[in-house]
Image 1 (cartoon, rainbow, N blue to C red):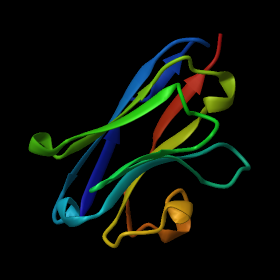
Image 2: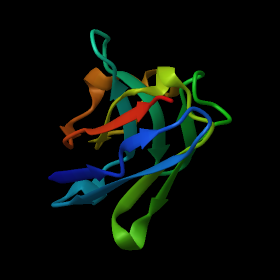
Image 3: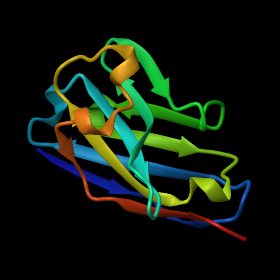
Image 4: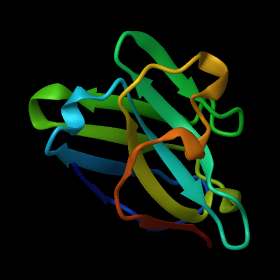
Length: 125
């Protein structure tokens, strides 16, 4: 299973970025795929989760600003980030989980099976 995240960079507050995560090697069999982030000296936190037969799940801090989407034909999941804030600065990771989880657990990083390398997002003027 391989996951490759890309699209990070430096952006001013209020700006936008679109992250991509391309998956292969069996990752297409998963039920959940999502984005997580980790800022310096903070725990990794769930940001947005795409689930095979359920609506997406978002952290409260990004609702209304971030949108997760999946292109099955390209084996890619995206994270469109709008109205970025300095507190969104972090390394962003994508991860998958094969088995379905209850809604309340979906943003828990510890429950995901496979991880890609991170991509740095810096929001600063």
